[in-house]
Length: 189
Length: 430
Image: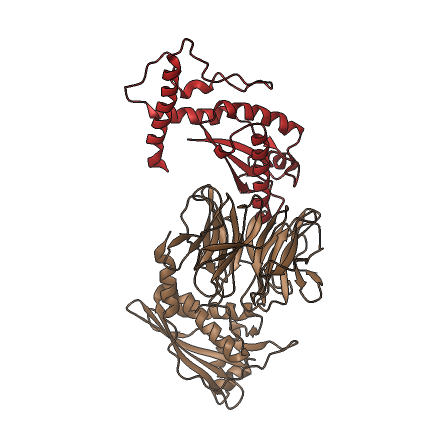
């Protein structure tokens, strides 16, 4: 994977820059991120355009700083543009709280369709190791299906179960369990 | 992966005893139930200048093996010196006088880094019969393996049953941020790590016919099935696709792997033919179907499904037909494991938030709880002779591996720390 990363990213940036340059030929440069059609409000929209060069910049002939780009994907993940959703015990139902969060996530995804995103499905430790892997898969896929129903590109979303293997909170009480029953998002380079 | 380790172990296993023709035994004396334990003495073998420590380790290992087997009562070594001053006419009679019906007398020598053990098994009843007289060799650092071979020979000679002292247990343990596959001798000794993925790996399972392990791994991203061979080579199994291929178990002939995959959307059971690389789907339900495991005769597959609510154990024909529910015990059941004879299924059953190991008699459906609410007790697997069960328990806080007799007695702790889970007991070495 790692050797692939640089050229791939470079290509991404060039493609992004090209499309900007092309659209720059028209009278008005459009926003790099189209406005979402409806609320809920986009999350940290101002941060996202870091990955694309400023619209004013011409076709980039000079070397693209890929380190900067990799950094910004890490930044995106760190800043949590895609919010984690939580589940009830032994459930993969996307409840009302999760629905609101996922609508925001779907908006961001639609505006950043170039990113591959992993949806990690996780469980608390109370189930068995084996069944929990399958349950985490069901959670991740329930989230993916909902995002796709909101218009996100399913081909960019990968549901990966981690069962109970990667707890967000290492504790053994109900408050830890509640934090661990989740689907979380990782933007992939 | 550490190629060298498995290869060395296998080489050691191959360096088996040079066996003179076996003398007539007293096999079969304890077949059936309600037997009396055989009283046996295992004095330290005599040793040359280089082998004193090896001699003591061999004797202690054999005593521990025989005690673990449940067939034997090892005569207290404190009594052994009495035989040296005994007025009995023969050595056999002297050993009989301290209560030993059998005694294994040996000598050990070391040269060129190799161990040479000669062991004689005597029946002490007058006139004193030599049951076998064998030589065992192996690298000096594999003294415990040499001892386990002698233990298995003693078990077979005196009980007519095959021993399990030379078997291994594979499991997962925490390593850095991940979980790697480990293995150890059946008695918890000689623990060694056999994967170095830096990732999470779970549920190793031994091929029934070869020194191969299948397990699930996140090393390249989504959970997939890997097969590790004795030479350390890792092969990614060709599965049905999707982003989750988990819980592998071997068919009894070692040619197929049954597993769960989300290739068709949700977790279903598939059967992979290793030679063709083709997978056949066996279940079809909107529920989770996972943790499949072959019956020892290969005709049935037990698995976990939540099609009727909380997860329970089901069984179906190997072709995927004739699905029926097996467990109603507790509110959550997973991790089915058939006994080697196929007459019982052990599984983890959760009641009031804690898992216990339960054994179900297949013909009647009757269940027996083997553990009793000391922490969680999960992932039971049988020893190849069906007399013992290894399982993971959190009874002291973190997870460790334990063994118990198939009736739940004689619980022994195998690991200390390291978060050891999902054990699997190997078949006997070839």
